[in-house]
Length: 428
Image (tube, rainbow, N blue to C red; front, side, top):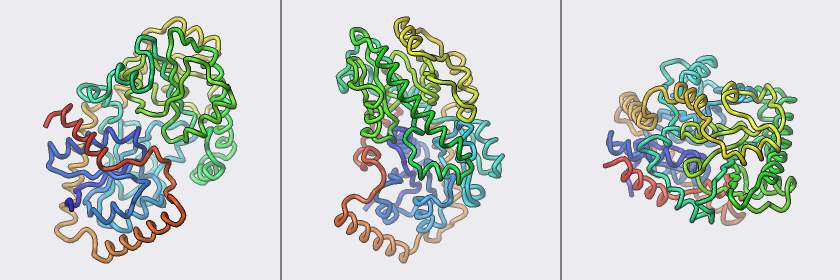
């Protein structure tokens, strides 16, 4: 049996987090002699608890004390030090109350990773103390910089995998109308967390109208003789649900417009010629990668959705304007947004190495606090085994009881393969 990891890092969404997580695993091994276990927050929770007794536990988010996965982990690893990697930090106005720390543990006892001073100030506003915040930069943006960008497949490889023509121009549309798919239960949760009910409902309706309009505009702009349009649903939206919305707006899909959910947003951005989308932070990533960008705006953005960085992006506000932009083969216009993003979210050099150093510092702090006493008890391990057995029996009798969608399931073979690939890019 492998030894217990020094740090357990939970991944919520493969496309958003796994590349950075595996790079961290390599850097922690190489530079600090620490072992990082990368496990799913959604699948096989008791297997992780049985296998490990970490000093540090890192979550992709940690703003809600009563989150089921967080409560479960704290039950079995009460002496561990907890870290919030905070993979969402640029909030629309409607989400500022929703995403704040809810509860005394997330506010007072968790260590928080910040991309820049803006998020540090946000956390301070809601009661987190400065000694629990580290400003390291945005690790996802670091993937677009050298040497990290060498990790990703080149355009020819991406074209072959997805049946695209590498000679044509590629317009990448990373859709971000997640609110269009919010169930009523999540609307109620937003209200509970501080959002206004009428704004939450309008947010969903606005996203639904905008998604439909964008689909119609893309249909009208399709030019299969010289253009590949790749519409990529958000990785956490079910593909079938997304395609139902698309079909309601346009049916059938025109030639030259493809809906592809596979692949990470960063490999698509690096391979594409330019990027258009809604109010997605993918536009910031495209600017970091020095790609032409446009924001698709089918109707005025409500104030409760607005964010100041939107003003730095050229807008496309009609179907005709979209066709004109496509025909003109837009050139570089990312400068203002790239300058802002570099200043605000890459303020301290290499953000991925910074994050690895921060996790190593937290491990040192945890070691000093915890001493040599066992980090978990035999009774806890037995309890976890019993819960795992009950969960396995339930799964056999009723089918898969995991609520997460299938595309966010991953195994340790994939973790090891990605880590090995990073070792070739970053050096042993």
